Length: 121
Image (cartoon, rainbow, N blue to C red):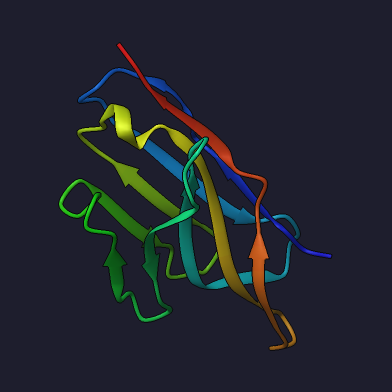
C-alpha cells in the first residue's frame, strides 16, 4: 500500500507562517490532484485547499489570500504555504491525493496521517 507523508507542522505565533509538505510514502508514485484537509477538535473535517495536475487551485474562504497550495511539476511533492496564521487555524492537517504509479495505474484517494499545526501566543 502507498500512503502519503506530511511534514512541516509545529507551534507558531499568530501572524506567523508554516510550510507543509506532502510526499508519497513509496518511490515510483507521483502526485496528481492534491487536497489539504484540516480537522480541529470538536469541528468537522474541512477541505482547506486543492490543486489539480494542471495547477488549478481552489481554497476555502477561511484561508483564501493567506494560504497557497502548490505541487512540483515532477509530481514528487506538494506544499501548503500558510501565512498570517490565526488561532482558528489550529488543527491536524491531512494531505489527501490521487496518485499515479510508474506503470500509469491510478491509486486514488490516498491519505497521510496528518501533521499538527498549533497557532498560539
